[in-house]
Length: 391
Ligand SMILES: [Fe+2]
Ligand SMILES: [Fe+2]
Image (tube, rainbow, N blue to C red; front, side, top):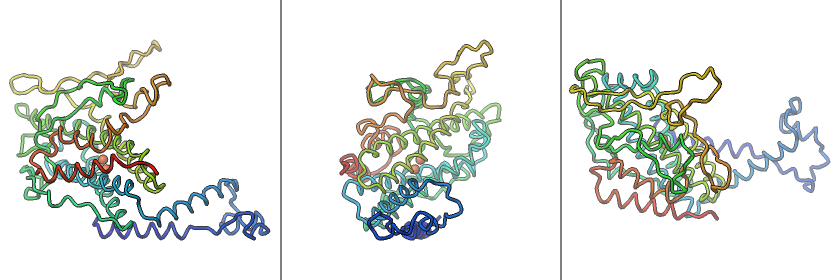
C-alpha cells in the first residue's frame, strides 16, 4: 500500500466519523416532544430496536466526543508518543520486510520456517503487512494533526542479505545478521513473576551473536550434512519474531497511562492490541523449534521443554515451562498483595517505555552499524515520549 493510498484512507475515515454525528437529543433542546418512536426512526432503527435507548444515547455521546477529539490539535505529550511510535513502526517495518523477502523467496529459509509451522511464511507476510499499516497510519495521523511525519530515511544505510530472495541492493535501517535474541519472555510469560516488581527470568535458549536471516544461499534443512545451518537460522528467527513483538506489546501498554486525548488513547490501545496478537502467534510457533546438532554432533539448539502428556488420572502434571503453556500465566500486577492476574508484562516506563525499548533493541544488535546521528535522533524521540504526562 502506498503512502498516498493510506493518506486517502485516513481522510475517508475522518469524513465517515463526521457524517455519523447526530443532532442533540437532550431533554431541554426542544426535541423532547418528538418522543421515542420518532427518535428511533430518525436513527433508522424503528423496526429493529435491538438496543435499549440508554445504549444508543451512550454511543452517540461517545461518537460526538471522538468527533470533537479528532478536530483538535495534539498536545506536546500526545505528539511525542505518536512520533516515537511512528519511528518504532518504521524500524519494525524494516526488519519485517527483510524477513518477508526471505520467507517468501529463499527456499532454505522458508523450509526452515515451515518446520516450525506450515503457515509461517504466510504469517511473516501478514505481520509485515501490519507493520506497514502501522507506520503509514501513524505518520498520516501526525500530518492530519498538522505535525511533521517522522522519517528515518537519512539513516537507511545498512546492507542487505546477499541470499536469494533478498532485495540485495536495498539499504536497510536494521541489522539482522548478528542478533542477541533475548528469549527470557518464554519463562516470563509462563511464570508468576513480573519485571515491574524486580523479577528476572533466565533465557530458555542462549542466542548470542547469531543470524536471523541467511546472508548467502544455504543447503535445504533436509540436507543430511549441512541442513542444520538454515534450520538454525529459522529457529533464531522464530524466537526473534516473538522477542520483537512482546517488546511492542509492552511498549504500547506503557503509553496507555500517558495519553491525553481519547483518540490517542484509542490509537495506542488498538495498535498495541495487534502487537500482542503478533506476539501470541509467535510465542506459540517458537515452541516448535527443533533441537539441532551440527556436523560434529555438537548441540547448537537445545531441546525445548516437552508439552505435557494427556492426564487421564485427572491430575495436572503440566510444567509451566512447557511449550504449550502459551497463554499469559497470571502474574503479579499493581500490588503483590492483590491476586495474580493474566496480563502483558512489563508495562512500567522504566521497564517497557520508550527509552527501555531503544536500549532493548540496541542490546539486541538490531542497530549494529548505525550512525551516532541515528542513536541521537531515536533517543531524543524516546525521551520526549517517556516524559509525556496525561492532562
Ligand atoms: Fe507494529
Ligand atoms: Fe509488531
